[in-house]
Image (cartoon, rainbow, N blue to C red; front, side, top):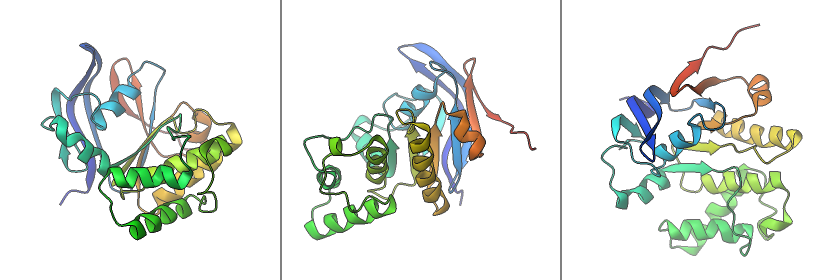
Length: 227
């Protein structure tokens, strides 16, 4: 049985009928940490949107967490997103809810019903990102780095096979970026597969890993030089 969590074959991606990326062939396996790089407008966001069902895959073949991206129906997209963890640059936390409230809201929205299980799950994911003492606080009471840790915890709620991180350090200072990066790497070491879009080449140099680059409407692996 294949341990691929994401496989695209001869895929082309369009945004408003405009070709963004063509002839994509990638295969990401369980447990990998993969960077996605490229200039603004090179197609990184369009690729990620295709992976979590925001853009329809019309050309080529693609599967993600054992779901066919070409044949998925609109009503099945919430099911796809429950099998993924998505981390955004701007956190997307609800300021009117506490941290615990934010995470409980997601669990209830994805079908969790038993209060005891919800409370236990929230505490477990917050512990993974060292935020379990901050559950009573509101997002605006936290630093940017702390909010991003909570966003990562939220992505872990439904035990995803793949975490898509879209510029997770983009709004953070360099020191905080390293802290958030180390949280992601620790999760990766525990078996989580991560695809991370980033502009931060300093992080790639500090924590080298497999790197895919969007450029000239193509996606290709960057061969890293060894010192």
